[in-house]
View (tube, rainbow, N blue to C red):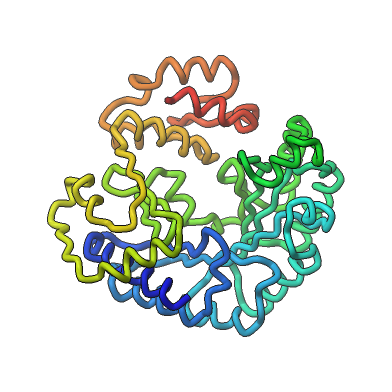
Length: 364
């Protein structure tokens, strides 16, 4: 652990020489279970960011599992400036948690939430999943009822997505686990929209709801297709018109930053993203983003937001009218009742939100 933290800090120091004139607005400690890291190490990381970067930070989030939170840790999270917690609940039904391979119980998740509230966190997000094998509509209704009783500030509710070569996918392939029912999953999603609206939540993104003014400021940057920096093994970034990611192996990552400290980096050419990124020792792959791809990604990400795509903002960003680039796709989607124009914006219809991937594919 100490060598990993040293390597992470060295990567941050390296990036601070590149990004010293760019303000840091939000920090998200995630991509696994950062709450396992001793709080002293988290303080080291956060103090370094505040020292080396230009900071105007409104939100620092940490992801936690329900069964790894102790009251002493909660207070120390607050002490180091963390002001938002995202809890990976996944389900409030024990049999479904077992199907997902989770080690916590529903009661543990509820008690963890209450503990965080009691200790002073006033911005808590819960992550749950639907469309899980053997999950019924009643199971999902029961979870939504618990949500309304707990009143978290933010909710991320995702349909189960199966990845190739995962244990769950292999179990389905050999018939040991039933395949999810897409129609049932759609019914669960529609129930989310209705139930949460009636309980005071605003849907601001396809899979995200919040109490007023409690949207995830960090994730909004992703959906607005704005630059962000990821550090650590496997971290992804979008900077200088390039998307890139670090190597995944923690041991290899550590060796890159602890054995090559003496390298001298030249960052006097920010306009040449490819040349700059060639000097970052931990990078695994880089994808240049040309204007056409950036416009397509902006449509895909922006349409995930309930506010939709603003025509004027698009033209200011790219110097071209949205209809001149995507007019045919937009007209077809309107005719198919997947998209609709309103007040200078394009937004997904309720049907479009259910068929989001079909909509997004039209812009590439």
